[in-house]
Length: 224
Figure: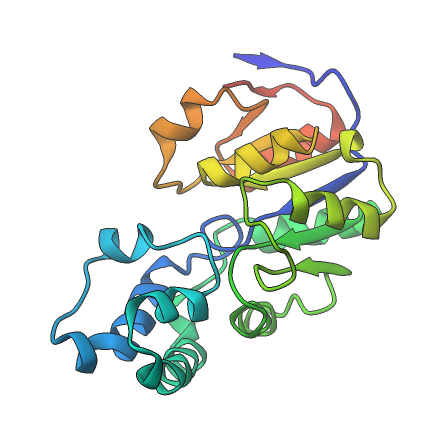
C-alpha cells in the first residue's frame, strides 16, 4: 500500500553491492579467479553469496590456507578491477544520486566489502565525489546487521540517526538500519533476498530508485 512517511529524511545511507551496483556476478567471477586453482572447481553464485557479510579478503582467509591467501587476495582484486565493466550501476541510480545531490541531501555508503573493492567500484561508476562518507567492512569491528557502521556514518554526516534512511537489499541492511533507528528502505529493484526482507517489514519497499527520492520528499511510497 502507499502511505506518507511519518518522519522526515534528511540524509540517505546506501549499501553498495546489490543496491547501487550490480556486482554479484563480478564478485562471483573474481572469487573463482582467486580460488579455482586451489580448490579445483568453481563455486556457484549461491555458494559465494552465502559467504557474504565480511570483506572479500576475510572471505578468502576463511577459505584457504594461510600461505595461499596473499596471492589469492591479489588475484581477486585484479580480476575485480579489470572486469568491472560487467558490474554496471542499476538503472536509475545515477539519476537518483544526481537528484539527491541537487537537493543538498547528504549521502553515505555503508558496505561490508573491503576498502579496496569499494574504491574500485566508486571510481568505476564515477561516484568518487558523491559520497562524503564511506564506511567499509574494514572500518568497523562488527558487521551489519549490527548498526555500528550506520551509526558511524550518521555521526560523520552530522545527522541524527532517526532522520536518516538506510537503503539496502539484504536482511543485514534492513537489520542494521532498524537497529540504528533509521527509516529502512528496501532496494527492491533487484534484491535476491525478497522474501526474507519483506518478512522483516521494512518501512518502505522501493521498486525503483526513483521511489527513494519520493520517500525523501515525503510522497506516497509502497509500504512493505
